[in-house]
Length: 299
Ligand SMILES: [Zn+2]
Ligand SMILES: [Zn+2]
Image (tube, rainbow, N blue to C red; front, side, top):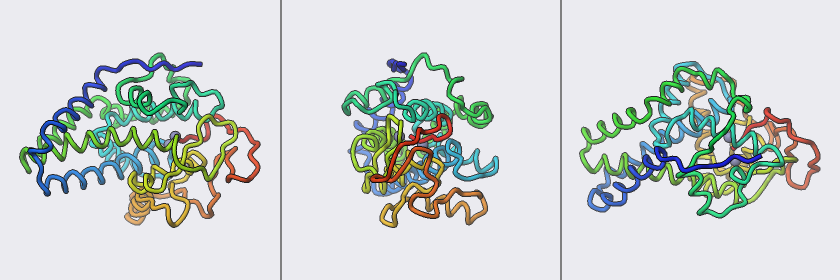
């Protein structure tokens, strides 16, 4: 089976609309307060919107939450600059579906170089996908909040830009919006590439095309997402770091939300090999079971 990727004009235009002004205006617009605003906004939106909200919460359901919390976290994802949360949810199901099997198409595995991966991920999109085959829960695919954000994430981004400009002027707009969005989009792709091609494996997964890799520094910088072999092996775990040294800021955020009563039923691993998916085993252990298709999800 093949999943062709074709040039995606709107997606490419969004990235260039962020990256070109960022490169042109960043030197003249520099200020310390604008850089602080950019770092704070990036941390809050990526931690709560991306890794905790959409990835660990909505897609992998590693904890439970109310509708308002879910809507708030999905909205924070739309403010990351990555695009539509529903669009990324669909892509995640597509990648998981194929990477959990032994015969993932070339476009969804990592046998290619960085440049090819950058072209496919940043400027292209899959075409001809039958999304109905991917066992995406209808309550996610038809979630009114996700559907609304799919339609309104660009206007929402423009509002964000307007607020930054109104409060902090040109400098805040350049660093808080153009530069930050560019770093998030490019960084998200780069972390994803390294998390499948570099680093080490704690677990092997029988029958899977991709097992992910763990990278300590990347794990810290990406709020836990860089412990990606752990995630492929235990996609149902809310905690991605598996050792005290694997600093997982996303996990701290889940614990904080739990303490506030905003999330509950958190899937926390009690031991180092708890919550592993079928077919996953620590390196050195016997790996002979087939992963159960459609149950384990990673990426
Ligand atoms: Zn995942
Ligand atoms: Zn992955």
